[in-house]
Image (cartoon, rainbow, N blue to C red; front, side):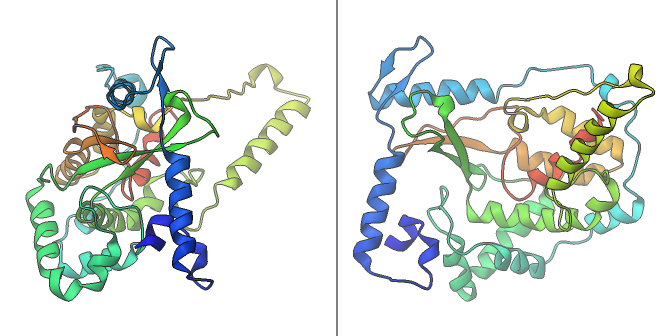
Length: 317
């Protein structure tokens, strides 16, 4: 247990002295402990209640939808790319084998979510808990309904700087329940099969066999050509955009419309939206979760949503 708490995965083949793991875990606790934060008025706050309120205010504001209504200018050139055969593949009957494969694909020891259990527990005692896990996951997938307790997510705050004073200086890490991770991984495994056929060849993020650094080289070569080209300069323009928290600000409605324009079946779209809209968040402050809150406008984290993010660029591009 102390090895898990220390997160010292590099010691798999090294010294397993328990005292080491105690020290390592204690160091992590001190480093990650939040002793105070500055609020919106730049006032230093040290009380636990004040710190929680600052974090809640920040993330509720971050995840709040701007309620846009006009998507036509962004979506009018998105062409259908998902065929009827692809939809049949996505919507075939879910089965126990897919769930077992998804469970085996998960890293055994990860930070636990609200259920308090790492995947290792379920993998080790699969003969005991497997039937219940499969029953729960299949019920969610077949009925397109995910209970709130399954999709409750903890947001752990990891310091990005040595001595953070503002909530923006923490990196949020989403901790989900194992049941939800398995459920989303089953969907992700199906989506991965068709994804290379429906996204741009230039989209290399989150795709097996594609290297994201290739796009850096392509950008460099493009700018080099623009700089040294002797003709057509009047038609060249380059934009460098830094979109703060762009992933977290994706609108649910936009995701729905993009998937429908691409040709995804309504049932698949409903499954994806259920995974997003059923989530509730609690922020972990020094190991203690805040009261859960629902927030329209948050796309979510985990195995499934980085894959969906890869085709959301179809509109702007």
